[in-house]
Image (cartoon, rainbow, N blue to C red; front, side, top):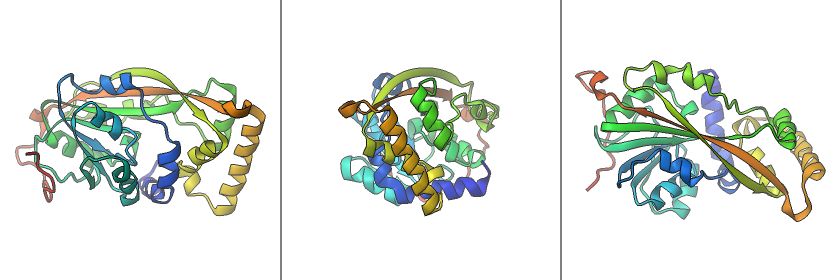
Length: 264
C-alpha cells in the first residue's frame, strides 16, 4: 500500500469509530499473555483505536498508556476505559527514552510509517524490552467466510509483507518470534454489517458502491445464518515479538518531541 493510500484509508476510521467499537473482536487471553511479561510492566499501546486490546492489557494490572492518531477512536476508548489515552502517532512518540517495558500494537503496525516509527519505538523501550504485534485475521477455510472475502477482500494472513519488511531488516530489533491462536465471534446481521463498514476499504467507497456492497452482505447473511444463532466467524490471532537492541540506536537520540506523560 503506497503512502497516500495508507494515509487516506487510515483517516477513514474517524468516520466509522462507532462501528469499529461495536463489531471488531477483542483478543484471546492466551494471545495477550504471550506478548507480556509475567510481572507488572509499563506498556505503551500504539494504534489503540477504540480500546479492544487496551482493555485486556489493563485488566492484567499493567501500567498502560494508549495512543492513537484518531481523536474519534480515542473518544470511544475513553468512554469505557480509565487509562491515559493520548492522541499521537507511532512516528513521533511524546515520551521520554526508556519509559516502557513493552510496546504493543494490535491490528495497527501496517498503518505505520515503519522507517520513522521503529527508531521511536526502540528509543522509548528499556533494555530487555520488546515490541509486540498482534492481528486477528479471518479463517477463510470456512465457506461463508470465503464468500465474504470475495466481497470485501482478503486480509493477507501469511504476513509475507511483515517478514520482508523493515522490521526484520532493522538492526534496532532482534528476530521475530510468532505464535498463533484461535477464537470465534458470533455475528448477528447488524454486527456483521458494522464489521464490514469498519474496514478502511469499505469506508472509503463512494456511498452508492458501499450501499450496493452492504446489500450483498445482507444476502450472504440470509443464505448462511442459522436463525437466532447468526453466523460464527473464526479468527486466527497471530502474535509477533521482537526484542529491542538499544545498542543500535544512534549516540544522538532523535528529537523526543514534547513529553506529555511521565510515570510517577
